[in-house]
Each structure stands twice: as structure tokens, then as C-alpha cells.
Length: 198
Image (cartoon, rainbow, N blue to C red):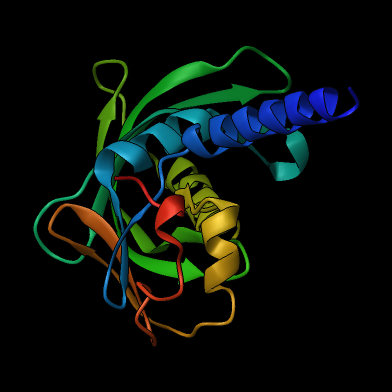
């Protein structure tokens, strides 16, 4: 009679674990490479924005929202988002849309892909005649440097990342519409098939 509640609890735990793993799509593995598609990265970004950065001792707040990722041919990704500024605790006022390009790095400590040396490539003002002045560009660059250092644009599921912890990263790049990190060992023998999407 005591076995039945135990089996019920184990079944419930299995469902919860499956739901947690399914909430974030697993990366794909091929040889030494682990890759993540643009759709999965976009979903991760949607869940981690908007982001607000204080500047000038809290006198100004810059808010980034509505991230849009594209992975063009080449070794840099494109990322755009809306920017709004608030001063002295006021409501944020839309400033415009910023587009940047960036290289890619993989950080074993955060278990995620990060921007690497992002640059602002384009700015579309929210109002006619608006522009990205030097002070606002400086604030934006400060935000990008801090964001690239601390926050991943995609974080690998901890269950998969735990298996990769002892491996050395050889490179991280944008390749064929995916974020790809190459490790120093063949991943197929290390990562159980059940952790990866079919």
C-alpha cells in the first residue's frame, strides 16, 4: 500500500522535470559543435527584455525593449531593439530603434553565448528630426559593454551545460543561421541523447 504513493510522487516529479527541460529547447550537437537556432535565441531574448540601465548616478534611465535577432551570413550577428530614456524618475520617452552587430563568445561560467565587441550600426529616431547625440551614444555603448560582459543572449539548459563544464572552448561563432560553440572533445559520447531535442 505504501508503494502506490511513492510511485505517484515519482511520476509527478518526472512530469515536472520534463516540463522544466521542455521550457527551454535543447541545443543540437554534431561532433565537437553545439549549436542553437535563431528561433530559440529569440525566445530567450524575449524573456530577458526589457532591460533598464541607470546612468549619471540615477539621473537618467535607459530602457531597451523588443529585441530582434537576425543571424546573417558571416561571423557577426545583428540585434535590434527599441530605446527609451527617462530623466529624474519621469516616464520613459521613446528615443528610437538601434541596430547593432556583434561577434560571439561562449562563457563557461554563465553557460551562455554573449555578445563580443558589439557596435552600433544604425539608429532610427522615434520622432522626425531626432538623432543619437554623443551623450546618448555614450550611454548606449556603456550599456552594451556591460550587457556583453554580464548577460548572455542565450543560456544553455543547466542539465546540458553541466556535462560540458570540464571541456575547453575552441571557438564560438555565427554559422549557417545558428550560434555555434566548438569544444575540444566530441560531444556525442558525453551528452546523453535524452537531453537533446529530437
